[in-house]
Image (cartoon, rainbow, N blue to C red; front, side, top):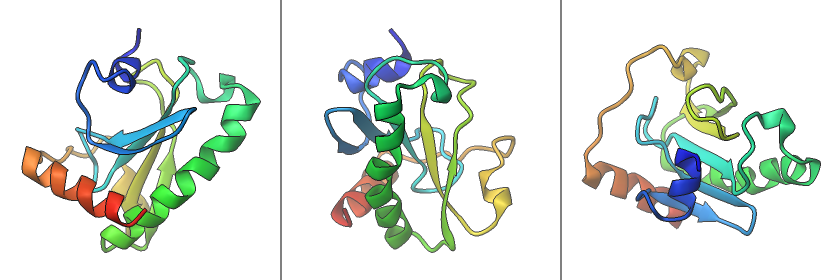
Amino acid sequence: MTLFSKIINGDIPSYTIAESEKFYAFLDIFPLQKGHTLIVPKIEVDKIFDVPDTYLSELLVFAKPIAAAIEKSFACNRVGMVTVGLEVPHAHLHLIPINTAADMEFSQPKLSLTKEEFAAIQASIVSKL
């Protein structure tokens, strides 16, 4: 069972943003920017392009209102979307509020946020869904 499956199942706590029958969205606990959100299919598939077509086509539709809520919650030019998938062998999509492409550089130091900061970010995004 992957780390993300444990989060989806509630075995590991997370800052939930949204959930559907097929997807789970939650805050990245090692964010590049405040509001950095992960969207994960509830099925365990390692690579994004191995995800079944029905899931793959619905992934962006699920992500769209979340991206809009992130954009309303943070001063940013847009919400960037990245799929890397090297750290956890479970397909996932990163939604990151950005002003420049450099804001999505995974080599940059990650933010260190308190539980209170994560809870405030979660509340802000969820309130705008």
